[in-house]
Image (cartoon, rainbow, N blue to C red; front, side, top):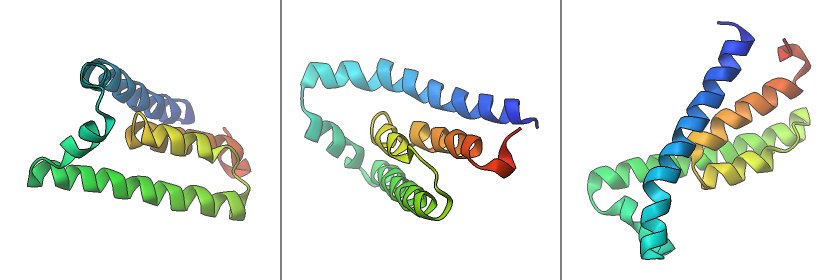
Length: 110
């Protein structure tokens, strides 16, 4: 896989989830106006709770990684990926961080 295809696929995943979020979540949230209820809806049954907990903990893994690489490798602007990892979600923040770090690490520049 080429570098261009790698980055393109990561950006595609982020874009697909962003569109899904905008079409599925945003209208329901605007209708209800209940942000807390929207978050808690991810825990309505054991299956949803499992997926939601997985996503939340994946965001914390991303947080630890971003903070570590900021200090150890000097990767900048990871905070943007942490924010996009919260809204719309980790499916956006994580691939964007991979693209960001790839472009900043000298050994991975194509």
